[in-house]
Length: 219
Image (cartoon, rainbow, N blue to C red; front, side, top):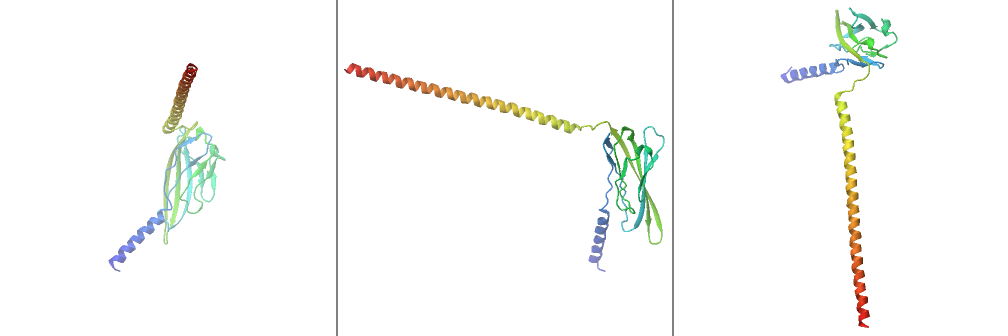
């Protein structure tokens, strides 16, 4: 094999490897929730070797500020099962649709309460099946969830809203000033026109009187 073919083969392998891993991206979960709303607890653990068959299961644990230890609240293998009465009827599976190869173990929590604040652990148990042996791979994702009574507005949003109101008020004042200025200018122009017309009228009247007087004298 020539050097050019070797280089081409290496580049091809790299591109293939990148393409295989492009379908899964590990992203951290959000950590701020609002009481009464729903919230997604994210848990993504990508399988490094996409060509290897694997099976996986997910277990979610929870520890509130008052708890000493974590307790299991949800598990998923082929179906999801709620393990804790605090979350009964409030957790839905929101992860991978492929029940064998679970790379997204996210869950959705309905009607979040203040008691849901705490630390969540997502444990991913994966069994990789090679040709001659099996390999267990475990991963843990931690989410520190803070539940607020109501949504907190960001400072940038507040500043933007204030600037918008200032702009509207400023624009309104400018328009009023322009209207008053234009009205006064038009009124002044009208008064000037009336004065000119009056002066012209008086000049014509005076000239007419003089003509009339001259005629009478000639008689």
